[in-house]
Image (cartoon, rainbow, N blue to C red):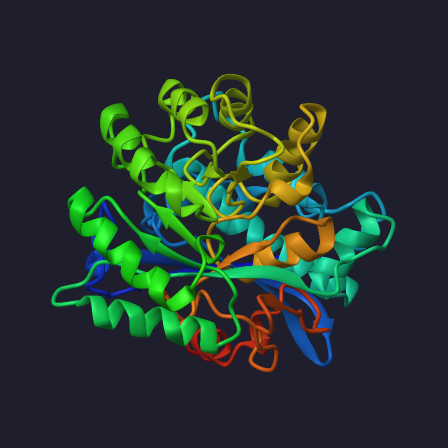
Amino acid sequence: MKIEEIREWVVPIRSDMRNAYIQFSAMTVSVVALVTDVMRRGRPVIGYGFNSNGRYAPHGLLHDRFLRRLQEASETSVLNDEQDNFDPQRVWNILMTGEKPGGHGERSVAVGVLDMAVWDAVAKIEDKPLYQMLADRYRCGEAEDKVFVYAAGGYYAPGKSLTALQEEMRRYLDSGYSVVKMKIGGASLEEDLQRIEAVLEIVGDGQALAVDANGRFDLDTALAYATALEPLGLFWYEEAGDPLDFELQKVLCRRYPHAMATGENLFSVQDATNLIRYAGLRPERDFLQFDCSLSYGLVEYLRILSMLEAHGWSRRRLIPHGGHQLSLNIAAGLGLGGNESYPGVFEPFGGWADDHPVVGGYVTLPDAPGIGFETNTGLKRLMANLMA
């Protein structure tokens, strides 16, 4: 059993939408195919991985360091004790050989891309959906039969009117979502409040709407928004300030009585630990959004889960960023609180299985080996074209 080949492609997103910080016209994604010599149903097992939106393709890091290390590793060093499958932890250790502690920026994205491909391959070799494999390994076989998902949208775009924003949110509700999210911080407080009120006219209840500032605000601005948002009783107020400004988050948690959400831009168990120690987050109220695709992969995410439980956090307070099927499998297999979703945005990377629609704010997962990428027509087509 061995890895025969590893391929990597850079795929553009090409969108004119923006959040409070960035515009997505030049955003790219790294897609990796890990080709093995294991045969299933007459074909070699291929594990696929890619990075979440919001971070550029880590092409240089992959080729300069991480792909080379994996390609140079001995065949047996990446296998489990039984020598009948690959071992994600041992692969991870090889990828991180020679890396110093700290520096958890884009490096963690490159490792996360490869880690996703490894888990996809491992589950395909076991001939199980990844969520069931995770439930068998870590949860006595108990997987969730459906996962809560919310629709993330409401981006700024040239010429996008309040009516267009309302129509977008109505489409999400008509598609089966019960909670939607919109961007704030890319306009004035007055304009953002107009946008929020327009969306509330469609969704009807503050608990059906979350807002996301993408780390845009200083403390004074974050507090001004908090004061304006408080009467609305929103589902959550997300990432008001810089993700590493734990003092800002702590002050905000003291002043804002409703749910906050953060964590998508923290990429290691150590950064996650510091967030829990110093940011004043409330385990009974707030939500954590760590994205395994951006933070060294599922191997590191399992460490984050252990740390959180040691600090008294329930897994139900985790709703990962990214809107991809890996996090959906993790949510179902490990019992998280839900997952982000990008209906019609960042396609094909953000879609679910074709025949598993969102119903009442929840989605079910296919009984397909691996992460399930091949059950999504857009992803299947993309990956087939890249392998051609």
